[in-house]
Length: 77
Figure (tube, rainbow, N blue to C red):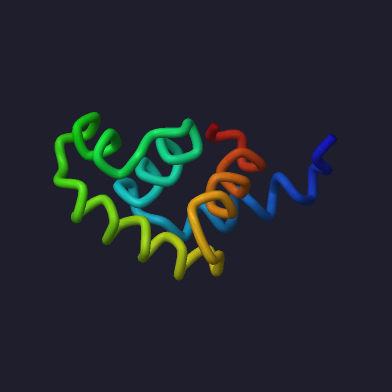
């Protein structure tokens, strides 16, 4: 079980992201590849990678799994 404090912190972290970054992280958390995310929201895979890299920096994580965990704790996945 995830504590209410952990959920609140995750939601605050996700609030740092813009809409596209948040969409990309959430879809990655659902298991989509960069190419699949791009097809889903109408972007090129290289653009998705750029959004993901910026999201990683803002969330202070090393990759998509850690970012997806934060999104899940925030209740977005």
